[in-house]
Length: 186
Image 1 (cartoon, helix red, strand yellow):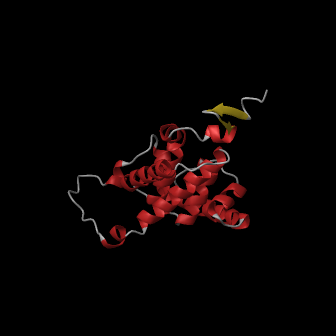
Image 2 (cartoon, one colour; image 1 turned 90 degrees about the vertical axis):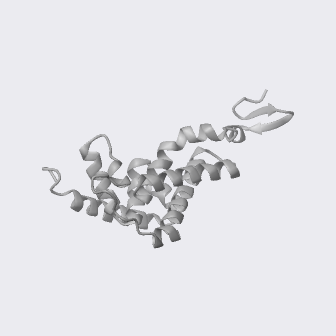
Image 3 (tube, helix red, strand yellow; image 1 turned 90 degrees about the horizontal axis):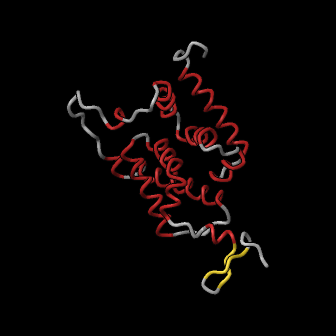
């Protein structure tokens, strides 16, 4: 008898474990990866409204295409790349290039000002991260928040591992400079 992990019979046809895992519905995938996708979207767009749009677009693409993956790491990489591409699309849209938002009531906070973290320290780190160039924000986020290795980041972003290491080093130095003075031990 074949193991359940290797093969399962469904509707008269065999289905291997990878295909069975891909039978997860979109709601389950959203539940598994929502924090990662939203965090990447927020890192790339710098504001909550655009991050919400990217989040919605990523999972809408997933639902429409329902791609088949070899494993969960492949699915995660697809979601990361799709999220980055959607964020780039929003950041380079004609709306972003041509529309200048006017300041409303000075007492009304902007969308960016309303987005805050639980602690002041997290807010300072997020603000410093948003000041970095996009390529540095991306590698820092993937390395520290998504726990991807240099090799995985290299694969996901389609750049050399050495380039990832250099970008991480430069990003850390820039973050250190931006946060210097905020903490006594820096």
